[in-house]
Length: 134
Image (tube, rainbow, N blue to C red):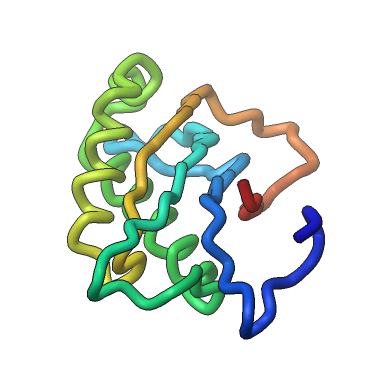
């Protein structure tokens, strides 16, 4: 199966994914905006109860939940803390995704996170996400 080919009914999609979120603006508890880039590794857990293959229908929901988790975490931390405590961002996302209503039979691990001051002059005013098949 090629990189851009879609799985068929005879070949379920069992590839791992990387969810890449860029330029996600969040407001810290001190009302300062910071920007978060995050990469989440999604690995299928195959066992006897798991459905076969990856469900692309959950991708927009996963995106919404990750953005919500980042915004909730930021609302409880000062911007100076967010800029230096990347481990706190990782923990907030990973722990809450374990109880999220998406991603059953997958394991989600943050593989990269960057928090930086918001660039108010940036032409890109909205965040973007991309899921890349592994």
